[in-house]
Length: 619
Image (cartoon, rainbow, N blue to C red; front, side, top):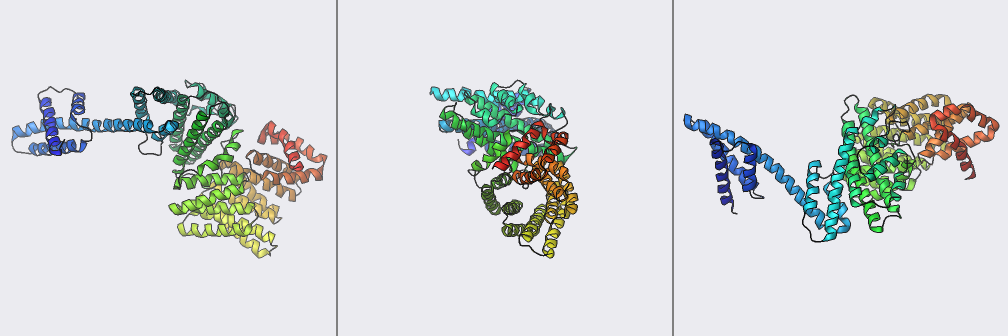
């Protein structure tokens, strides 16, 4: 219809509503809304809005006129106009929703059947501005079920998708009242604690949720690997998987919203948020791996569920990467004890390379690269950090670029290539000072000082070289302290203590190591905590305080091995030397300290120590 004809039509509609309101024939807002629904053409909102704006302006002028009769009528008409404006805003919202639902249905239908599940995930992706909310998902489920299609297979698949969406929203409504109550059932917070009452999985599994989701929660509660659980599923329907996806996605969103709004402690809220994001990211990545390994599912379902689970991993990590507190340094093992953590991190890095080169990807690859370094996969870690550095540089994310220079420096320290380690640390130091990245500067000083100490030892340099290196470490420690950054301070303290151990000065090393140990424990960095104990073992060995060396070494060896870090072998080497030197006294020391060891690593950990030492010696 021509523009002027539309304007005339809408002028008549507005006048009609005003007149009917003045006569008392329109008694509710709903009547006005229904008139708008009946008469406003699709994609003609601008014309109606222009007519409404013109009529409002005219009435406002009449209301200011000197004619009392005209003024009174205009005032009453303006009340009707306000009702029209309110219902017009409602019409726009509803129309946008209808448009979003129609577009989503169209997108799902036009996608190749083999990728229809991915199309569902696309319309629910929280990273997209037009992502559907819960109310819109309800309407989408109805629209899919009612959509007229002649093909029986397509009709059945749309019914499955509709059913999965409805069940997912229903499962979430059953879980929502129990979102955080599990956190108040014990002494420790975290998804992986073995203490009763503090894990969510058991509580959530008892709620009114679907069978597949219940089975998953029960497996996680028993610390069964989600990889193994997924690999053993023999009958997972499209509806089952979609239900689980919607419930888990809304669980994660609810937990993060709660954690981020903790007024009593922003720091604790941030730590919890990091743990929540990582927990769900690892869970989805495990499910992707497990479905891919399945021999019980047919090839179509296996590939479809694995790819969709991978997509959920990417979506969650992208949301995480946009947070200010995304961890560019360190690895966060704190809330992930249990058998399922290590396997997930070994393969998480590979599929992320398939994501588009974005700033979010750079940050995700940074986190995964640091984890690969910890587990000893140095080549994979280097590749991830170089890729992340290049992407961050192109995206202008200087903090991320500096973080990757620092991580590359640590990789070369692990490889005893101290010249390269110093080179990367110097680049990180220069860039961090240019951009004002104080955390990056603190980490660069720690890396530079640590590398300089070991290079000086390697080159048998004079004392002045060591003093320069120690100065870097002390500067890093001071800066970390002023920043209030516990993790960087822990790194600097442990690096300084390790440097003094390298210089055969255990008396100076121990206070720094103790400070670093406490900071690492408080910040939840299990890896740095274990590394500090390894340095303690060396220091006590130099002091000939063998019982303390055995205690610290045993705990460090076990924890590093459980985290998947290859550095457990270095501590095992020291303990093997002690076992050879002390003979029966070594075993007696372990027995005498059994209660302290069990308090740190549990009965299973204590029983595992001898096996670890034997494995080290036979290898």
